[in-house]
Length: 457
Image 1 (cartoon, rainbow, N blue to C red):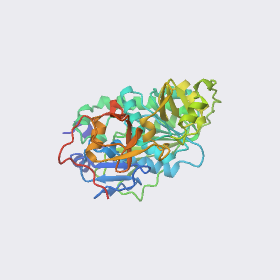
Image 2 (cartoon, rainbow, N blue to C red; image 1 turned 90 degrees about the vertical axis):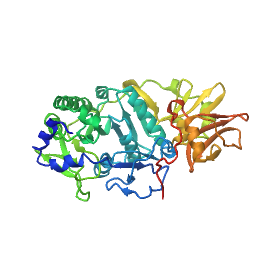
Image 3 (cartoon, one colour; image 1 turned 45 degrees about the vertical axis):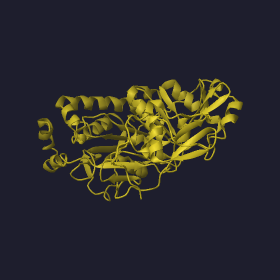
Image 4 (cartoon, rainbow, N blue to C red; image 1 turned 135 degrees about the vertical axis):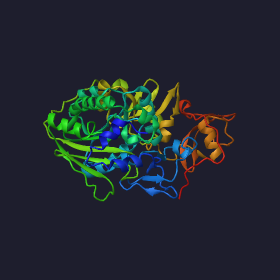
């Protein structure tokens, strides 16, 4: 069932119980979700908390996410439990008292970025990056549904961040790896080879070298993989410390049953093994940068041409909490930025930005068309638009962009809600209802009797 090269190697890893691990990898994967505390406070029925994540929960079985309106509304996200441990790294080692900038370098599909967005708070900046175009689109969708207004999504190679020396306080590198921690799936097993583990190790070194200059002095690098391979884990961190001035940071894990501390020639790493914890295989290590890093005095071009006209900001201020000096006009769209304009234009000059905070509206002639992103975000001014509550069948019809049986009392823009949570926009023009759920996100599944949906306390 498992590759012979993998089995023979883990026999030599002193901190792994190879027999117990192989047996655990034949069990079904645990199901876990992270709740969005800004949108949803109810807990799943018959769930168990993830011990290291405040809003993480294990479910008894895998629900139908596609047919659950609350998933599309950003109330929760299916996130692997082991990876939620980044919460402890941030709580134990990050200083969130000042203005900080965080980079999630390999952000797709989005679970860790959503988590970081919550942990650092609305007044700090998250740059969430994914180099592959299709995956970057998924990342942007995930952050939009979550309502994360403090994030900029980029699609750039790691080498591009070298043009931002000393810019980030925290960098998370959840590196592409050989995927041994996911060996419960046939796909992960079939893609594994000894040569691929070596290829992954070299690629990870390149990524770490490329991104290191962007970390400020005394900033922290969080490195993680979903593999058990020392050549991709602790040996890579040791290689980095031999080439760059840094110190390995310890994490307090004694209160979390099953996490294994790995001490490799003074390097601290932490292994999550499915025979010891309820989750997939995972490795994490944290470094603090100790070498001097000169911080460039970034200069930006003049930005008056990017600012909306005063009459345009006046026309939309009733909808949003975003201040006028954080608004950007790009083509016919107005965006609310998570940073000031100079900082944005500096990032724009060096990175490929595909989503800049929150799209507030589109201007069409003299009309302002509110955006789906605004309605989903934490920056929507409450009660600024009328709303109607939908039952389950109409919420699914909305997500499919089918006809709705609902009646809207007020003409014009309305918010469709489900269980009190915003789903998106309807424009009631009197003779019909126009559905403004993004067409590229619409679901194609029909409602099926007896589907498994999460039940809530």
